[in-house]
Image 1 (cartoon, rainbow, N blue to C red):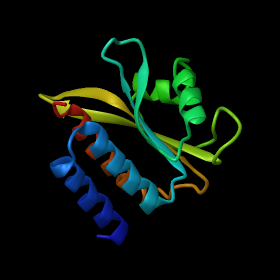
Image 2 (cartoon, rainbow, N blue to C red):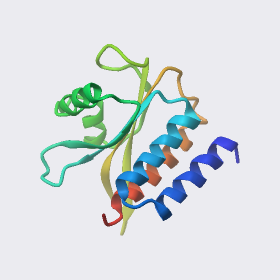
Image 3 (tube, rainbow, N blue to C red):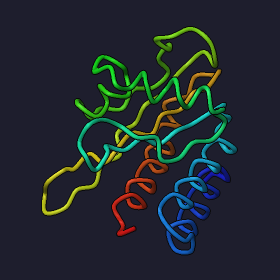
Length: 155
């Protein structure tokens, strides 16, 4: 196991076991992913309890203006994050739909499977300058899986 994989696993598991609440757990998981994988910014979005869209529940590397812009943008069903909820397939190393910021984006659906039924809980959105090698994709997915478990736990 690589040092990066070990750090993501150890820190993510610790966040699930010891952080007080799902938002602090998500912040720790995002922090580890951004530190270990050279990600410029990251956000976790979940569907609101009201069912009227997506809500940013954790982020790192985004200022208030960027958070507000992202929150508004994901209201468009054609936005890559909204599409990831609708069609839960990861996308890696895609160019952003709007100018500015890092060169690439990756979006991973946050899914749990219970009783053979997949439930999409949200999206892990990452902005980065260098492409992720396909060898790194399972590490991103592992971070997403840890985030999905944190979201699913009672809060």
